[in-house]
Length: 172
Length: 321
Image (spheres, each protein chain N blue to C red):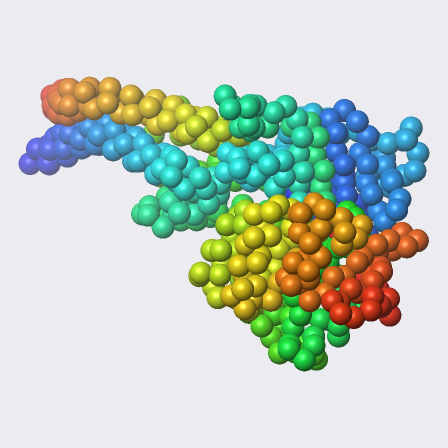
């Protein structure tokens, strides 16, 4: 009886791990699309409002749900306080907790943060181009992962279940 | 309030701390890539040494590098120079505190030959804004007559305090003063010098009944203000074209009082420049105030009123910012 319960627990644990991996794949894709949406929002502010980047963040903060809404508000406020810190520093620090909460890789985060370091263009189209480039790269990664995530998800789930079964058989 | 320190990024603030402490005395800070930093205080030209202290000695003068200048400009433009494209094209931008940042570098021209933007900015002139409250005290009693406020033209060569005087006149006329109650004033501030607006918000006190149209060409702006804000007084800085003069006439015909400044040594200069005879000119303005400089100080030289004798005032103008 106890053996049976133990075996079931091991199996469900491994299956749970597989489900967690599958969700992580899907979660990364969702997170990447979310970042694309944020960059698109900022690009719209630059394109149509010609607002400075801190103002773009203030406007975006009103439209974004937390934790990004809060993070963008913080960027705008800190830039208004004018402590002398650059936009790149403030943006990186303020958005770090929000980015950490998402299942992203370090590379994804760096792509997202890239535009904040590449400021200083007197032509608005150049600044837009920078935003579009970051967005395009994230979008490309998201599309690729989306294609793979179904297959990878099934594989993670299968491996979890099979691994669990194998472990149960070995320990039986 | 010390606001110029905010123009500098964190890395440079230690160096500029001592300069910022003497903001009230500073007229201009001239920055040229690879050249000594020059600070103008009153009639004096000073340099900054490597510790950021004032010095008269050119050999001790610190230079600003192209990278530092670029970083400074980025910070002034809030890391978004594209948002200041129009201002940069005109060669200056107004920042928090009403200070004006003049820039020069390499002009990028469009097909028509007009300037699209300025790149490789290597020369920056920080003109520190000073509002001299009370600068107009000397002329205020002369501004009112039996018919109420008079239309006035402030006339002088550059650097004699016209804008400072006009700014304080607007404030006192708008808020009300011992000689007249407060009036609605419409200001067309084409070059952001009067109000020193930053993001549309005046940084200088122009009074509680003043509406400011910032960055708009004067001729178009006067018409717009007349239609939208129904001002009792219209004020413009640096009357410079026939078109602006025509719009001023329209505003006067609508019953507005006019306050304006213009460059010139005397009224005849203006009559020649605008091809308007003395009678036409005097129909528009009830009074012309001639300003000048004496011993480095800005002073009011003469009040000219049609039908009245020219008079020398008891009051004095103030130094321009």
